[in-house]
Image (cartoon, rainbow, N blue to C red):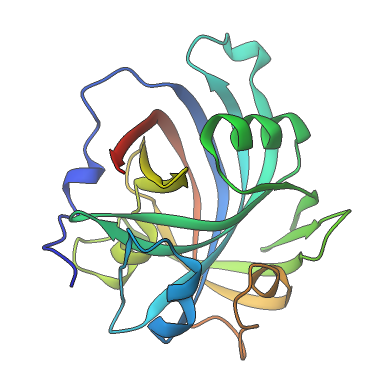
Length: 243
């Protein structure tokens, strides 16, 4: 059984030195929900599923990463690339966060660094982000393994920062990530202002990333669709929290 979940504490900036900085831009948030028993086998036993109305939410989130650098790198040599992650939501000892099934990125150096340094399941992909009038098209194709995305999204009316307790806050405002390495759970944290969320609609979608992660291919369009123009992010290093 999940302990009492504190959804506010992770939104506060940690009282320690940030390991790096990034800017996240043009974020699309697509979510489907599944029975918990479908998602449970893909998540470590040490993590509880964080359920939305009794179902496990799975998110598909493509976006642009800009100014990606460790804290000791000067800004002029920061990296910029595209990323798409497939994720679900979990709780560890009352702290809610994200479990990543996969993270595709268009920069091979960033993929290697994140796999080695963070133990995250990054995959190299060829990616595009193209603005077309009022729509945004996200494209991702892995050159050496299954998994692709072709999404056209139309951002809609601004919703503003998500209120605690709302569905949008549950799906969007996630500041912790968990990784498992050698039977040990480690927690990473990011800090940023609340997303300036927008409603959004899907104009076209062709996705095989969920199926490539071992999840069922979604039956139909996503249940929840949001967009955010972007936030500036501080990244804090991994901490061992169990094992």
